[in-house]
Image (cartoon, rainbow, N blue to C red):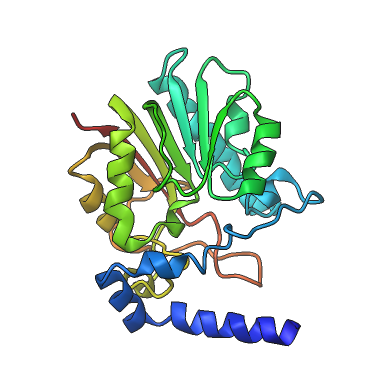
Length: 261
């Protein structure tokens, strides 16, 4: 059984890491259909023996704890600076509620979405006062607008052909002058610019700025950990201390933007 799984994984990687095929799929907007078979959270089952941080997809290594501490601190500071009591906040891709828990018992009205049923169930236990929507953000109907929308670590699963629709939907669900807070793993190689892996896309900051400009006024757009400004891709990315992967959450970019009227 393990051998069969390895073969299937190898074949999927062969397809998703094929630059020519990926760009063909993007050109004809077929990448989002292909992605439905690749998104790991569609069938993800929560392991109750893991910590909330591990369930959310982050290890407990010191380097990751350092990054998450700064990320959480920055999010709260931005929320407190931008909002007043009873303002509405939406967490896109809330997972088990790791970030949402920071706002527990606050005076804000909390809302969240996630594609995974188990994640939603756990987030409800952690933040029972929030309103949850289970499903793909792009297809969820929400009869409410928000003052602040944040999306952390989820943007890699948004297909290239649907980024504009994703941005438009956020724009439509924000109140006038509402704030978008986006933290995403950014491009760290030329291969990322060519979409070498459509199951986990690390976007170029320059591309994101161009796509978002018609809808938002950019307040900040910088490296989330060390504040560097990167254009197309990061030529000096951080190296993962985990030998099993070349990805680390230290390679993340932060966008804070205000809705254009």
